Amino acid sequence: MKQEQCLSKKREKEHTLREKEWLIAYYTELTLTKSYFMELTIPQDYFVTYEKLFGGRIVDKAVDHGAVINVLESNDDKSGSSTETELSDDVITGEDAVRFYELITSPPKDTLRERIIEEALQRFPNPEEPTDVDIDL
Amino acid sequence: MVKFTIGMLDSKMALDRFNCGNDLVNRFLKEKAYDQQQRKLTKVYVIHRGADVFGFYAIACSSLRLRLPDMTSEFRVPGMLLGMIGVDKRYQGKGISKHLIDHCISLSKSIGKTIACRILYVDALGSMVDYYEKLAFRYISKTGSDRHRLYLDLL
Image (cartoon, rainbow over all chains, first blue to last red; front, side):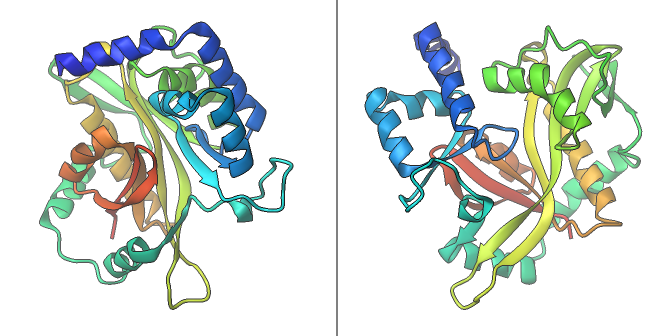
C-alpha cells in the first residue's frame, strides 16, 4: 500500500505544469467528453496525431488522471466531430453482450446481492431526504 | 461516533478543502458538480457536517445498449449510472464510501418504483473492481485501458 502511494506521488510529480496544461487543452479542444466523468471518444486520426505529438505518453497521462479513452475507428468524417450514433463505447457487443443479456433475462439467485440491497434500504429508507449517519472516526 | 448527513449538494457547501487524491474528481466536485446538477445533467449527493463535505457521488439516468449477434436491433437495459465517487483523503478507510454506495443503491431502488431502472452501473478503475464485486456488483466488460464496467441488478 505504501509503495503504491509512493509510486502514485512520484507519478504526480512527473506531471509537469506544461503537460497538465496540454491535458486540459486536450480535454477542452476535443470537447468530446461524453459525460461528466471525463470519458473521451477520440477519432483515430486525432488519436494518432496526439500520440505522435506526445510520444505516446498522452494517453497514459490522461488515464493516470482518471480519464477513459475510447478510440473510434477511422471513418470518412475527418472533422473530428462525432455524432451520438457514432459513439460505440456504451454498446456492449460479442460474448460480453450475450453473457449480460442472459444475466438480465434469467438472473441467478444471489444472496449477497439481496443482502446488500436489503441493508441499503434499511440504512436509507428515504434516500431523497437528508439522512444522518454515525461514523466511527 | 460522529454524526454526518447525506444529502444533495447545495451552493452553500464548502468544497475548497476537499481532496480525495484524484485531481479530476476534485475538479469535478469543485468546479462542475453544482453547475451540472443545476442543469440536470447529474445529481450530486454529499456526506457532510454543516458546510464541510467529506465525500460525494454523482448519479444520472442512463442505459446500457447490447448488440447481440442474432438480433437486428439493440437491447437496452435502463438503469442509473454511478458516474463519480470520492472521499476526502482524511476520511478514507472509515466506511464513508460504503455509506455513499448504500445511499446510491437505495436511491436507485426508490427511482425504480416509478421509472424502469433495472441496474446500477459504474465504470470503475481496475483497482476498484474487487471492491465493487464484494458489494455484489457483477463484471460486464472492459470499457477503457483501465476502466471496467460493473453492475448491480436492482431486480
